Length: 110
Image (tube, rainbow, N blue to C red; front, side, top):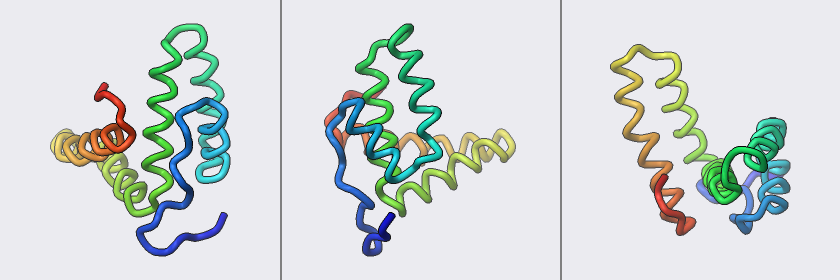
């Protein structure tokens, strides 16, 4: 994978289709492909496919921007490994990053 200029996305935002999202994840976060496949199988059986596509479109939107992805991971780690106060403190920036991604993609908030 090529390293983009500072602050630039790794790849263009792909269309919100299963095939395009799978390809994007393979490029920018190949370790997430098993989770993608597992959740796709579940979505086909249990949840609406539109929700699945929106969730992974948001994931790709965040992961294709290294600075935002790094910040998101920081707050996720703080929420997972910290105490209750740290988890509450991390919820706001996590929510903002997710809300911003939904807005950038023209998706309704969950």
